[in-house]
Length: 309
Ligand SMILES: Cc1ncc(COP(=O)(O)O)c(C=O)c1O
Image 1 (cartoon, rainbow, N blue to C red):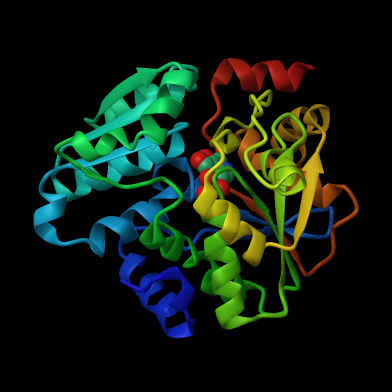
Image 2: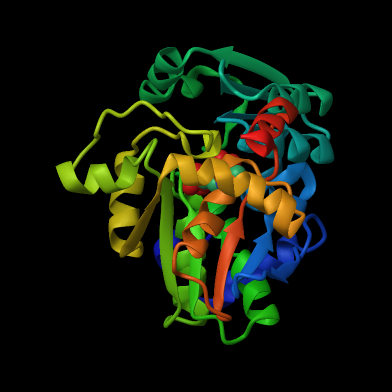
């Protein structure tokens, strides 16, 4: 496995080849705003997360995988982990926030995995104490894992194939695995592309972390539940070195953007999935700009609420 510091063009193409039989080359669709949307909501399980989880499971020794897979997740990593485990015919258990959308919890169970729901404080404690080290399954960290991050870099050759002169990519950020993979992929294949991190002002974790040089102690107040990951010191250093530009989207704008995506672009996005498009609409649109629509797993009741607000 390539350590992320050593991800070069060959490593990005290699992981893309490894993943090709298991994931989709998702559509890059032009929008009336001028920029394009990369529809990762069209991946199996409705988000980009299958890239990282297939990469992690396939790069791991077979005897480890046979122990079963375990992850911790706001929802989409759980779905991806369950899907990958099912395709490899191994058991899967996922630890999730007890506030995770019902669609995600039910989806995990429908894929044959066990969902363990915990209140946020207990779950953060579970992570902080690395409780998974006592568990029988092999643990795949949803973002601070080199194979997961390298798996996400497979999105870059797809964007370059469909829009070779891309100049700017907007990426929603939770724990930071997706944007690290994308930043590493572009650094290897087209280093002049600007990679911009996007968060909601309802949970501006990383901008605040850089401001106070450590964990800011925020509680998420956003519909972008996919970006509600806690502070992680390893990702803090990685994001500091890989991402130089950040945008905050006002939560009220984000709520409207989910509705605009449905009515104007005819695409269903969850809150986190709409973040980059919201940032693109706010003066960052050009024919060479791509917004990553990272996921589409939104509860029907929330979607209905946003459509009628
Ligand atoms: C839909 C969606 N977008 C963005 C993210 C953020 O990804 P990361 O935690 O790798 O930054 C997530 C994470 O779960 C997600 O589910």
